[in-house]
Image 1 (cartoon, rainbow, N blue to C red):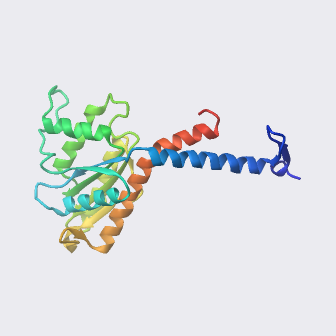
Image 2: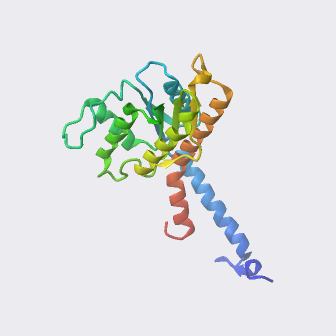
Image 3: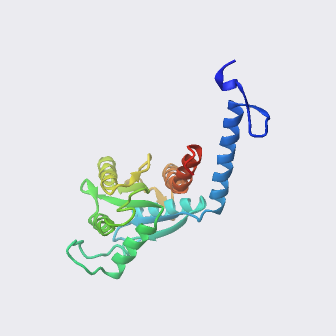
Length: 236
């Protein structure tokens, strides 16, 4: 008989196998994780992006992605062009505008982030990049910049040529800010007119929902995974 199947005596003198012990322990941890998930506050997902043009494809994509996050139980906050109309970021300036304070505070409280940018000349827009530069104000925070947060990336371009390089640029910025870009990033070709009445076509909608679910899943799982590992290793 193998060691894994060998009988052992538990504290009450009942014969149990090592495998049974492991299954019971796993069930106990899963049960506690489920209880924590049920009692945990809904994660906050902050959306950042858009363009200076009202109801742009970028803004519509961001709005749809946040709606998908809400359908999965998240709270959401959307910061678009009016909210991102900020002075050029200057680290030497001590005071911050009311909009800048709102942006930085929102990200500091976020459990996950979705960033949406148009593709301008092969990269993200100045509006979005400047907003992300303000996250330098979080350098001394407990979780600096985008640390520990999943970040969904959306780019909207007119023609596919700029899609890949703009998405790669945005993901690189997220990496530099210590964020975790979701496995799926979404590039939308606005030349295909993918939005009708504010709703994306089926392929764009599917991609945005998948990306949103990855952000929400990561946001929901952070604390639970840490606690479960501690329990399994006896460090709880």
